[in-house]
Image (cartoon, rainbow, N blue to C red; front, side, top):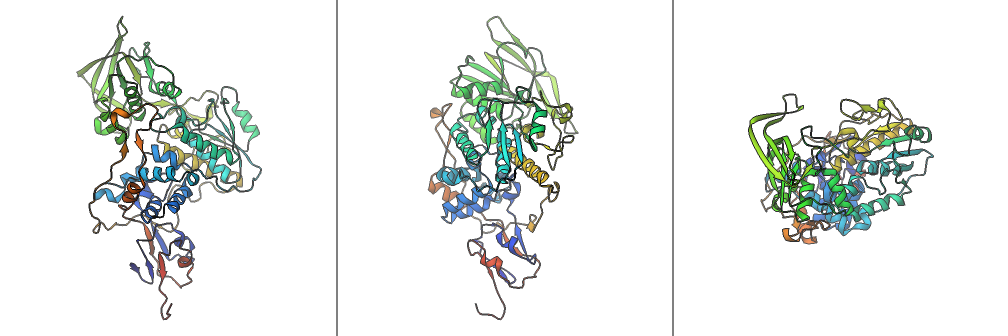
Length: 533
């Protein structure tokens, strides 16, 4: 037991839900927020569902996870897991596998993970969401939950954006995306596929017919190299390659591939090529190995499967001979960004690398397709939608809110979900006539983030291994990583240090007891003087 004046908190039971802190009418309690939760873009109480799982309360753990997101099954597979980088257990013997535990709860309790939430009474407001990727789906969910009538406009034949068309099935099965869409459909969200702005939908028509608009079109158009030979036949963008593979199209690439780029799309393309039984697959990128923007877990996976990584090289010129073979000359890249953090690669032209390949894949980044949208919506320098960085409101169209990769530039799935949520919250406030910036852009309320975690009692037990198929069993449409068993998940959850907890702060308690009575796990006790309880 941890004694804080007259407030006692059982740390073994407390899972930092914060109910007691919210119920305290005298501002006496504070919630020490766990570093993992502080790092989570969607403010998920990671400690909460992990602590409940460690206590054997699996169903309650799944419910706690679902309380924060309807996308647990997706994030349990493809989240960039910034929480794990800040996990205090990492200072002892490696961070807790937070993402993998999330997947376990979603996979073992799908009825909870995909549960349709109660919806507020419809307020008569009509909202259009343009785009059905992670940002668009998150915005639609949030707005529908708040009582608005939501219609999603998607230019493709199928819903899901990058979740369906770009992220390979060996990372995210299409079935998971389908179940998520089904959940949203049960909420009453209307889906209109094959309807894109600039194609068969006019932006001004949307403005005239809807009370608010969310733009979440993503950044899925490939960027050009900008060097000689890039327009040759046989050069394909990483995005196009991943799309074709996801559709099951046959692609003739030969037996040697060079992929130019160091991000997740480049690594996904490389792994896809290996699973298509291509003999030699190389990734060549500007960044050094440690600076590559791709997730480290995916880079290690690529190396396991035989992908060769040539880090620190930039393309200079490319030629294609009469037999269809490519010869590419690279220069050593000394730095990628200048002193002002602007993208401005510096090369040593005296240090060269020459490689040959049957095909070249360009995976150097994506840009936004802005055709069909008014010029005043676009930041011409960044070629992104221009909007307020806190409220996501368009700078020139008050009823329009922007989010996702089309607003921030290419980012991760979890950051897109956060962006969609924030845009939806702003639009909801706009429709209700409330202040958009109130309590935004900083942590508000009775929370403590700057505190030291006691690691003295932590024993180095070793981090559990993720479950993966053997390299020779990995296939293009089969998940490489498999779900934890119950024993694995429980053991990994028990490694959590439960950093966050409720603490007495102002010594203003007058023993009214709502904090104790409403604690769902009876972790808090108020010691009342001169009274035997």
